[in-house]
Figure 1 (cartoon, rainbow, N blue to C red):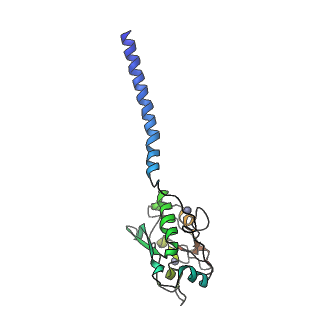
Figure 2: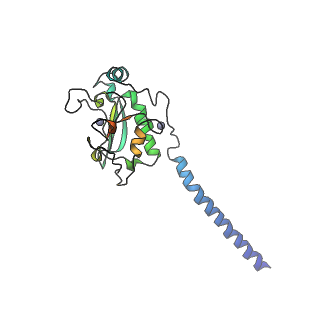
Figure 3: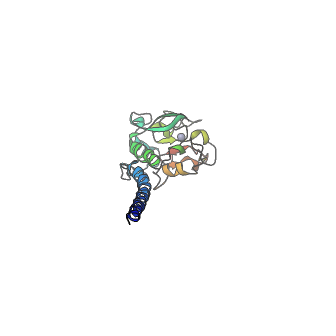
Length: 205
Ligand SMILES: [Zn+2]
Ligand SMILES: [Zn+2]
């Protein structure tokens, strides 16, 4: 009788351990996910996703003149920037600082998708559109180029291979462009001379 009850007790103990182990397996990943960027939510208010201007005069009204202090007044830190092993800051206009630095950058991080970004990633640049004397959207801090090495100007499609070597499809463009889950940038792939790396916060310019 004593033998039976001690075997029974040990069987219950083993079953109890198994239940605990299963509970831990179920619990640990959800705890890890809950802690990863638990604080972050999209800001789709007009501060997070402000109105997007159309044309030069509306661009200047919202962003200020080209090559101004505001044009490179906001920055965000990207996992690959000037090379595949080099993280760095990307500068944009304060007008879209929250959309880029808070919405887009955190969206990619919260998705565990930093590996989908590839170099180069470039924002503000006080320059003309190449081959013209028209100021580039980059001169207003209103444009960002991303994954530029694999998405040169003139290439009529998006190459989604990230710095991690995995093809992420159009994940990165979907975060930048259009309405939710995008963040309202206009995609240069749609220019008559396609520029797949290029996302700008102005239309008709
Ligand atoms: Zn969002
Ligand atoms: Zn560009």
